[in-house]
Image (cartoon, rainbow over all chains, first blue to last red; front, side, top):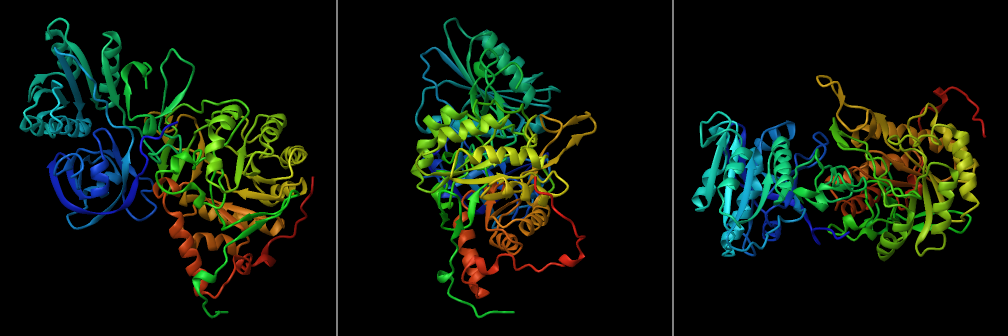
Length: 280
Length: 328
């Protein structure tokens, strides 16, 4: 099969900034020009946690942003990380001036559908899934895209809605949902999407990309299949290698076809919702 | 005894593996471990796959196999527990779609073969005979993650019968990949050599498990899996040493190897070659650095060829109980 990237950089890079975002979230900005200029939204980097054998395997992170701007002039990779285990815990202790081993970019970029007006392009993020959506918006704005982006973000409570201000600062229509109602719609982000879909004028062409926790991804897949919507879902599986060699990060193919396992790292990480089985 | 150091460029790393069809000459002792190198193409973004002295692609069976249900891998302390289940495109697609690319790398290919029975192994080998750069086969008799995977590997007589049958089909290098999940590895090594294997490789993964006690479930898609990585290196070293004492065919060491130091440890207990596996996941570009280090370390010790180091580990073998090793 065709691999998503022709060249991939592996090296040690300098941390330019570490920003604590509260609630166990943090952002690190890394000086990595050769990775930054080749990275497109939806692609990820594999991060080596330390020089030793424990933790052993690299951790995959979607690229949250590249700086100063996406494209040829980018020199920085920005990662949004949530502490979730010993690997991310160790990464949270890295500070400005220290180095970090990166491998990337990896995986396919997120698709950019060609929609005819009237149209709506939904970007649905849950928790840490917000990360690749921000770069996606920055890229579309930079290229002067007319894709009508609507960002919908969900979290348990307001303090966990990390990064939403960034979308608003870009001038993107942003909708929020929290389980406790502390910000935006009280409920989950899928209900919010459902409402929005219902309010669209007849004949609106709809597409979307979702990236979030497992439950959100499952619900998004169901809504896309039921209503025959052109949605893609970005998956985040445990990836021993991240470049297709280990066959460890697979998901099953569509339920109606013969049993076939696809590698999330090189065939994804973004898959058409209709090609995902009912449970994945 | 400390020798005078030599120029690192003058250190010779080549390895010779004799087979009935002639010697296989490898430019250096480092191969990728089957199952961790995909089909070569996955490494193209990182380095020319032909940097390895030979390619050992992921196992090929007669029929295509979907592999095991996810999750297929989980990290354990200094180790990786996997249950991939030999997902592979099958013989026909391997020949039409994968082999031409592997041949472009310009180095010998040792095809890792797996099967449900002896006929399966023979079918794959017969179909691949005469293909450009296919210089031999690694017979996988040791996968712990499929039902029939250890049918051969746990029984030295069955291993021997398989090797004898495949021996009839090829004069290329036959390397038997042994499982560590046995009591006496020497018995299995001897069985492989007696049946006509030109080399043995060990160890395949160690059967292991990881459970979530709250859910009462395995953390991977099957109850048990195969453990690889640094956690198993001391086990591999012990088993390679025991195997090397029992046979005189070349032994290819596998198990948690990630540096030149590790390679030299294995060579000192008798290994001729090594395979790097799990480490390639985290550092796919590691090989040139490892080879440079290998030459430097040997040069510093005044060792001009790996043969001078091979088997120099003395051990305290007089402490081992006497035993006879039955030859099947």
